[in-house]
Image (cartoon, rainbow, N blue to C red; front, side, top):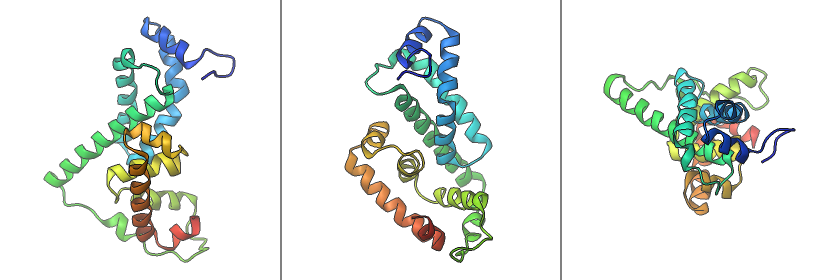
Length: 191
């Protein structure tokens, strides 16, 4: 994909494969915002999210020689970010199960909000949505993040997650039902 008066993604990939560190830096610069949005959508705003974002680009650099160009570079990078976020979420869950009782405070604080309430500003909405996203399984969360927050099509989402389009649709449907139950009137207000 060409970018404003700059090299294409494929040109940058070829240069990076040949050892051009500046070309790889350009790739990072182009896609760091997309990776951050994907990772934060999957994990919420937390210190681990920065680590996952960095690990995404480390993995990209390590496996750049395997990138065949079948999918757009951005799609390939987002797929790596999703996989790294899922891995981190599994590690987080194992840690919590071993050492910490699960804290349901975030969910309990999501009392139904009166429609049109001025008490819920944009930041509070974001916190509530991320808390609710944290309550659905990671596979469904990945679909919600890609389809609803990042705006990818069903086909693109299926390709990124390496699942059939029907699986994307069913996961999205189940996730939205769960979110509707968790967010109540706030959910209805935004649909």
